[in-house]
Image (cartoon, rainbow, N blue to C red; front, side, top):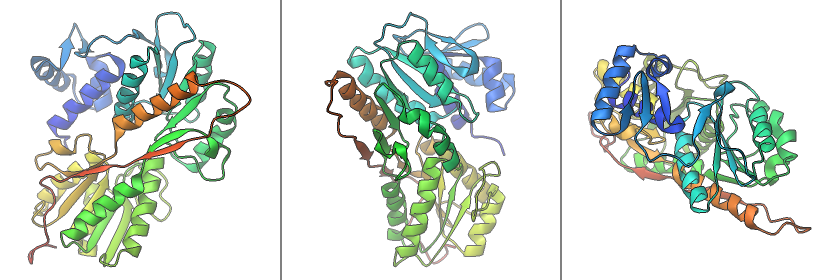
Length: 377
């Protein structure tokens, strides 16, 4: 199924803003579309003033960053200027637009404080963050903002020892270490995803929906938290009559009791449950489900209401999606401010009290949800 044009162009912008520039051929490979398609998108985005074109290269239209970057092996981006012991290293997974928004929030706070940023992009391989952190510390990074790619509990456990041994201030972004682990006493700033899940359920229940399908894409910390929250809320809510939980894509990873479904399977799951609503994490899968429902004569929201979880591109669909939005930029900003407190605070025998900060998501109601009618379902 073809990706919506607006969504593809948002992904192009996210890739450019994350690294400053990219080759057209690389964008085509990442997006799995033709070079001609990318060139057409780039021309339109350049016409709108949202990026700048070069000879085979696309550059961000944002003001030049204070940390000129150069590509390094493994997808890392690092400042070209010599380290001065004043930099903060930020480590985020590649191709993760959610955390790139958190990065922009962190950048505003760090630059306002006069801190230079060393951005490191971790590739899609287990344990990729550790060598990047070691290189950043060797370059003289004064502190760290980290979002490790913990798809499973085993991934988190593999990082425990070296993270716990860090000798510079470090704050986790959108990562909530397992209670009782050695990382439980590490500074972190997260979205309260259970609150976000409840926002979605209460919105749908308030519209009269009683049978709901929930789906998450990746076996990530956010996905695991959401699955647990949706299961508990649906089980305990007096107005939810039936619910099903699933993984929404074949590449979603090990699911245990959860199935990895295609949009067609999700449609079958909706029909089997006689559900009138679905909540999907994240936006892309929600938009794809809407298209598949339309192909099968199911109207959104007349026959089925859909809520997306993330709200990065949810509002760009042919039917703009009602969505829960974690406070992505605010998470980055709050994490940077906490790190600055650690860097500027006194160093001595009294250890600072560890802080675990949770910020509340918001719900934006758009055209994909409506009250149940006699013809729904």
